[in-house]
Image: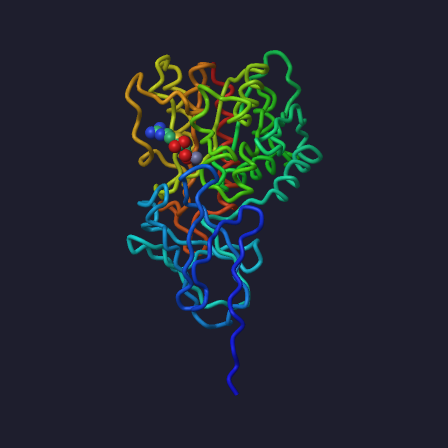
Length: 383
Ligand code: GEM
Ligand code: ZN
């Protein structure tokens, strides 16, 4: 008696889902394509579910348009992530043949999810906001709206008293960089610790202004880089508008209202297998003091954790040549403060690799706690 295998069912019609099915008839050669961001040519993020797997049998998947992705050199050394329960994620054997990204799995269960990185869902975001307000003692001081009307929450830890330093941390301008909201979960988790003298020192001197997610529309639609209007929010800081980039427009309004003394913009990087920080050295108004603060931050964080380093990163901008449309440069120039873009890898930290998970949500969370220790030391340094 021949047993016919139920055909594979592949779906992505869920929060941050992204895949197009070209041909799923052959489990040994499932042909797929990554869908571009809406109103944009950017593509790289993928996230989909496979059902009716034949347990124990090797299945092979091919993202046939990987070479057309925004960062097609980033596939070398990259491994896709998989999960049976959408909670515990692990890396799977992956190769890039110059055209397609190919990965395989002999599943232990009949359904599995695959993604570019461990996704952070909107439902978890809503839970995180509740945690921030009800357990971490933050106040929801303003709510902006995305293009499609999703909330952009601005939380403050602290009373806003005159004289307090204003430390701003925003995350996930680029919607596919899910490690950014994992970072914010780690930050909000640390704010819940009862006896934490380092945080007490920080909060005695500073208030934290937190935007856990800058681009909810883009994440929900499975975008890599843009909002629902196809706008790269990290290229909107000189000309933000209510129509095309309301997310940035809202945060800039709030920054003008409250002021900024230290700014961190949390991102993920497709190519570089390390954690690093980019700064605003190319700004026209860049100062030696800003340079000193950047060097202090980078040195201390690399002393605190092996999950940060200063050897690898983006090329430094030449003096006066910065792209002022970037958040880090725009805020650093406007407020003459320490302003950094913090980059976590989609791959792994090659200084401390984890063969099972690569870089992960858990490691993003721990990095945030180490960043808070560094910031705590910084706020006692004269501006
Ligand atoms: C990057 S920030 C780019 C910074 N580049 C240099 N050379 N300083 C972006 O927006 O492209 C952040 C990111 O996407 O992760
Ligand atoms: Zn980014």
